Length: 599
Image (cartoon, rainbow, N blue to C red; front, side):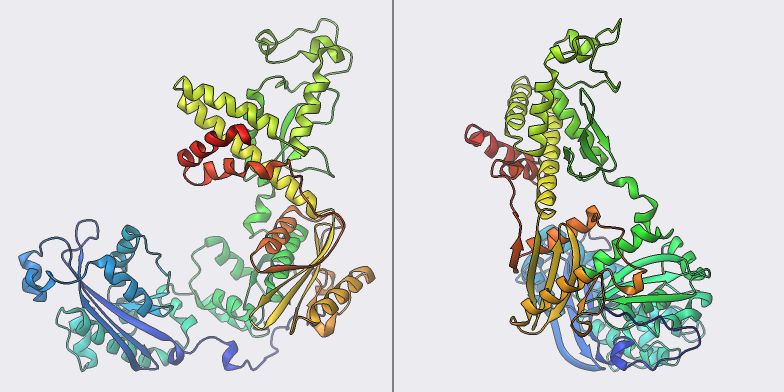
């Protein structure tokens, strides 16, 4: 893939309207207002919902309903709103109203006057009744009013005061729909004022909530050369060092947001102060962008990327390479050595080791033992308890080689014997009412099974060259992976072009790079060599990204060269242990216990 050189300071580009953001005139807003029995969702309930949907200043829909709060309405609230207990007696409950309201709101930007109040009640109701809150962008007209009205004309920012200032057609009266109508009018009047200050696009609204320092806002021109395409981007400092790397489905919009939205992370604000240019790497697919990001972070170690500051977070459990191996938690593995993982974290690695030690036989000491015992060697307490065959004293005669071989088989092949033995131990603990020990050991088995399954999953990927494709809209995304490394991706029209795109990517990989398919099939080792991979050995995060992409529903295998398979008697058959920890532990454990004999 050929990537254009980044724009130098002072060179201007005229962006299209579709590339600089979404104009406020084309944004759909849903202005909502609630009436409630009190001020807190913990002790009060909703009595009425009113909402107005607008686009371009035109009303395109309205929503209104009374709601039975399930509790008496206080007399003070009745006097304020005029909503009585008799009025809501036959009204639907909030759990019946929420589906209709959420469907009405859709993906629109939500607007409210003193938004934390209204949104707090709605989110609490969704949580209580099992509805998913859409996570829509929220605009608070109180915040807008603080930016575009003076204290002289609006000494307070109450809805009634703002309605008087802007002369709304609807007068707020503490009824939900009328208040929502008035709020919507006020919002559009304030948009007219804000336009004079350059607030004309949806992306600009966040700048009102979180003001951007002038020193950062002045650098917004750095986004002018960035294309509105998927890919990766890199902020560079005064010495052309890479400061920060990220990805986005729309590079221009994402980079622009750094300069128009108030960044809350102190480290990123510091990075923006140092940045002098932005380098863009458009890619054919999101998968390629994500792989490119982790390769660039590995190569450059940008100081403002959290991942590069803590690269040692990945943990494995490895069987050490010595005469009498032991289990060790490590931060890297080489080749196809006997290992478990990558684990979800060091805590899981330790749980897995403790579970294996529970069976006994595996030494826990960290001393590197010679084949021939040292003169005067003494055994530890574990040997006296029968939990270790004491190779430190008996050497090869201790039979430790058989223990190590069984452990190696469990790690790289079938962990079933180990899982079965640990399941018996858990049952013993539970029978003795030692539930904490049983629970801890169960989590250890879960971590062990997950780690072995992940090792086998990625090992299978590293043995093959495969081509996969998935449909996205009216295009096909094509990905080629060679022994766990992403060789390239493409976005093509029509299924017939998939094989041709894959052939181009493979030819490019064999030729060491270059343009492919007129730029549509993007090689992740492109970008002028600056964002290239870190060698032939694929990064573990890269392997996981590829595997997850292939396993997504809808992905189709086009071709596989090599043996892409995991052992039938591998860790995958014990996936219920992972579910036991991830979801309902007791329920899944009971189901597993009933079928343990046949597992």
